[in-house]
Image 1 (cartoon, helix red, strand yellow):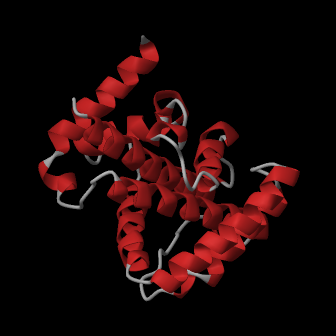
Image 2 (cartoon, rainbow, N blue to C red):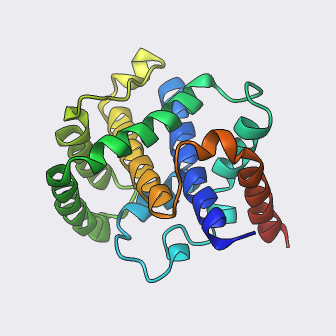
Length: 210
């Protein structure tokens, strides 16, 4: 298995994990912190020495995303909410729109640097850090012509803290989508390289189990 495919699948698993957590938040108002933290931490790793530095042990820290990737590619429609797939595809599409807007990319970079200082002081999952990331998403990506429409339980979505966590995770999903494209990922791969993606995800899981 070549390195590029493993990197693409790692980043795609992060996109899917972000989409899964957004769906869970919208539906139940709660998510496992251990699954959200690797995604949020990756936002603050902008110039890694190695690809592996972004998510660390992806086979463990992105286990949920890898599992759902296998379900989506191997058994579509089974056990995965359609909203998860919709959010994941929307994140990839939104990243494409963002790539065409260098001014917004620069603004995001500056905003993430500001949020990073709060993360260093309060922690990556602290509500102040989450609020800063959510506000950054709202001030930038929410203004693009394409917007991700999150559906779920209104009582949760209308809660300011839950709404902030949703936006922060969408921003983390965009980070993963950028990484996916930088690793060579393309939308046509989702149709014509499913077998390779499945094999790569299985290999990553085997590394965890070894």
